[in-house]
Length: 484
Image 1 (cartoon, rainbow, N blue to C red):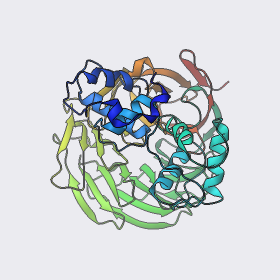
Image 2 (tube, one colour):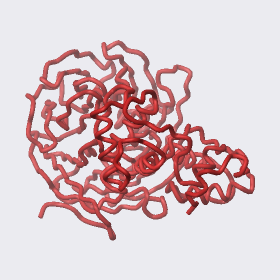
Image 3 (tube, one colour):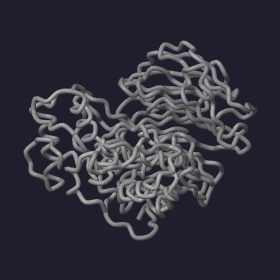
């Protein structure tokens, strides 16, 4: 492991070349070896700076608070040798600016508070959260964010905030019959700065209702009915206390948490099979029964209509949007596809094996990984479509959800079980480490919760929802979880 005593080295003393995609310099092998200390990723070796090496460099840069450009320059080399962020500012009460926002976001993902929504290091919220973090990590509790605190924060960037990264077990917390029929979609409330959060869950069902629940499973708001058909999908608005739902009858509805309908509009293409909303809440994407994608603003105006390279019968099955705005879809006829910028009419679409049907697609919260399920097969790609891992599940996969860090991926399946994949296991190639038993019917939806609470939810075709508590510890071999 590189020595932290090298932190004072200057760029000239390191005397390292700038490396980027395509480099074949002798130091590429050393770079790949150093990356292996910090970022788990398969096939990063061989002495050639290929696309997978670039992906791993970007992940390392994210962890170290560096610009994620995939280019290994002086700062990236210094971080690789020291194992710590470089040239980070000292922050304390009264500090302002972008570094304070970055600090708040990192603390939030680590499980220490919710961002305040401004760039001020204030006396109460931020100071208290920093002090709690320092105490938990064995640092001097002075609420001053110096090099040691930045170093500790960097270690949380690619891990689940509940632990150093390892989940010990999933245990059933609650088990409720929430709907009369199949739960088609499951969503968890996002964390929004400045808003009080009840950690709510939204469910959409074939029984024509959307319902809002606390994470324990008790209803907190009235139901409302789907318009012209059973409800196929539901998402939370990323910045407002609103729900957006789609129906097999072909409509989109926007409602508040009190079940008041704010807007209803037609999706203009048959059934809404699935929907997604961009991270800024500017537009909603509907995946329609006519195999087209349609982008609407939140007033119901049609912005764009997209068609996959090989459209066909059967319609879209799944749609997912990354934090940066990439759009991925799955369908029976055209397989999986990726739009880099769906709002740009000149942006090309990338097809991912169009000859094979795809069940589900799902981006991790950060947007760096894309999971694609085809029958029982799961493939993990980077957001640039570089293959990272492949796994065969024991049964056909019907639903996917990443944990907050992107380390764990839950797969709901037709055999009534949920399988959890650890993408850091097996030298970064991924391995199924949990088999959750509790459902008595095929699993139709899964969802990891957001910070600060860390739980997991799964729903099935009978309308039942199970909320699982996650215990931390040292895992040894595959574990089964379920009702005792």
